[in-house]
Image (cartoon, rainbow, N blue to C red; front, side, top):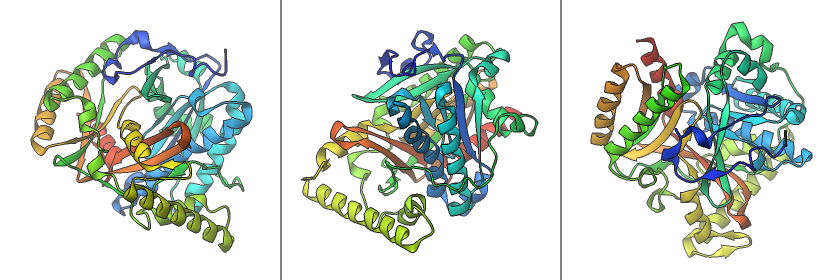
Length: 396
């Protein structure tokens, strides 16, 4: 099967069509699922280390995308999804070795530089299908030239269970030992200040379904999304956490030290100074360009700002709907009530977390082509705390 399987899929533009099974194609049987997760991320969140957790979650994606370039693969060839404190990617078999090395490097970075224990797994798609689950992917176009993956079939959910289960971890999980290398995190930045809620609260919402039949699962999840839409009364894009009014860059950036830790090439003080100077100089140029509405080098501030609003990844699906929405307190309460009704019917489970702002972590591939993507997560715990609430609902 072609290395460019994902980039050759037909794309769609309307996220509300996520439950349309005709949009999904089964992953090739010889592909693998690469997955990461911060162990006990709740402890780090209790310490207020929200940005560190998100940065490590996005590092897995960045390192793997950079690692497969040597195979002639581009970022658009690899389906992936950001989960807040981890990530999921699908990779061809030929990419297994560079991706494994990249993930080991990220595990090492997370432990040594951030004091965060990370686990990672490489799971064959064929093993998932042996358990009567599937893993299908759809190609969602969020803007011209920028795509994200949606996953269905129950395979991502099963992979996460295996990775976190003591019974299965030894079979698929990568060893947590010193790789002796630093991952290539070129393109990973976090310069934007927290996005303050404009409507009242920044809501992080997870919706899953306990139903076994995939068609019924998707139908139930579609009912969940429709409930969200009907409550908000507007297009999801109108509740995008990133808007012109709340996107700004401070100097130094709010995550300056975290980004230095991620990008310093070694323990040598000069490498840390070099990383710091690069971050400070680039953010100063960015602030100047935005304040003056000008282009500096390849950085066209007005165009980049406009693209950023479209390229914000605030709605995702990987067997679970993952949304970050700017809404009012009343809308949140109404949404919670109506989703509880669906949950009481046995159709869905959900978890939500409300905060005053959202955090943004960015992957910048090619500014001149508008090829950049911005992951958002609610501050104060976001996806990790919403997942905890979801888990509690599943027990009931």
